[in-house]
Amino acid sequence: MAKPLLSVRNLAKRYGGVVALENMNLSAQPGTIHAVVGENGAGKSTLMKILAGVVRPDGGTIEIDGQAVTIASPNEARLRGIGMVYQELSLFPDRSVLANLFVNREPVRHGLVSLSSMERQCERLLDQLGLHVDVRAPVSRLSIGERQLVELCRVLLEKPRLLILDEPNSALNQQETERLFAVLHGLRRQGITMLYVSHRLEEVFSISDRITITRNGRDVATKERAALTIPEVIEGMIGRQREALFPPPLPAKVDASPRELVVSGLAGGRLRQIDFKAHSGEVVGFAGLEGSGVTDILNILFGLRRARRGTARFPDGRGLPKSTTEASRRKVCLVPADRRHNGLMLDKSILFNISNIVVGARNDGPLWFSPKGALQRATRQIEALRIKGLPHALANSLSGGNQQKVVIGKWLEIGPQVFLLDDPTRGVDVGAKREIYGLIRKIAADGGIVLFSSTELPELIGLCDRILVIYQGRLAGEVAGDGMDSRAILHLLNTGERSGRSPGPDAYEATVA
Image (cartoon, one colour):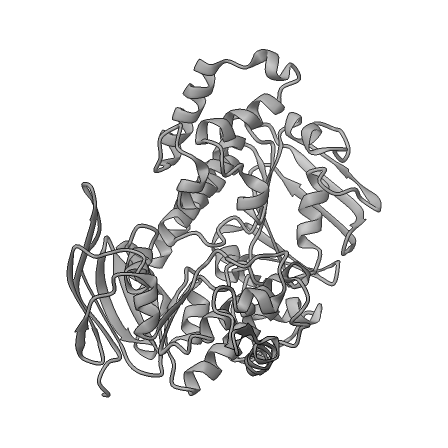
């Protein structure tokens, strides 16, 4: 085996009394994609920030090409050939692609900024990444996937030898993810070493050469991808087998009266027409490719989008809500796909986020508000959901898993009758996923109707009682029991038709978007 490009030995970092890293070890070979996986709090982000020069370690050594180095700043990391693409995009949306790529490093010729040189470099690199956009256009005109490639391009201009990618596709759809992965494979062929951090294990197995599993600030194991299975990785991350991820259905409460949601001929947005029923006590899954109309179904039922035609009868005997306020007052609740922009007020506290929705769901609104009651509600959800934060902690200070618990917790305070969840575990670590699954099971057991969409087929199969597959705005089929097979579902997703035989194992990835 070749000499490692990067070696990390016994790295340690504490924040006060909290241990972030303790004897962390990692070795990355040249020209490989090395995945780093673990729950939130396992130390992944701290490790990457140390390598990027953002955080200083308390102990341990870092070696580049066998030589011990100190990385005291991001600039020093760049000088040593280390670049990092962060999960949150840092582009200026109102500035051009060109300006974003060369901010604070414009090439100068004869004392003047050389726009022609900038354009040549920019277009050459973007062409290598397969991104064909107007470099003078503002970034705001680009799709999220195109912006992610521009972010990557900005780092590649520094010609890094080691590229760190922190959840680079968390906001990308399937097509954009495939495009990004093709780019990463090309960079690997050029000899660039990559550290790839992700919660999406199916994608980790499709992109990586080696995998390091982390837990509680330590490395648990590092193995070739071919020597590992997803259940083994999960067990290493959380100390439990995969089967423990999905809690069994809970017994329904004796006093939970049967209720029903009936949807007939519903259309709107990309949704062309759908009919289905959902009953209290069950978790109904929705699977669909990007643009299939799944999100439109949930948004229409929540009053976030108006239906073009069709009807729905809710458990309270009424039709579609005309607004989100009406929906919440009728105990119809939505956990949106983008929690950071649509599910939370990030600059507000846990207390505010939970109390705000409760006040809005009451007819007497602010006249009813009680500071003492608000604190009690926030504290109750923090304790019940094991949210790692105090009531007055800002939402943007929480991990992705804890943010999602706040989104769910605010709805639990009003007792949802119809609970709509749009890809609720995206960007959430495995441990937090299990807790969210348990909450969903409890809502169903308490007599709630749960509609659950996801971009992960194993999640849909493990959690849902039945799955409705949506293809190009229509219901392609329903699977339940032994019919909940990933290959059969994927065939429905991609063709809209049932197949007598399953596609081959390499036909599709077991992930939808």
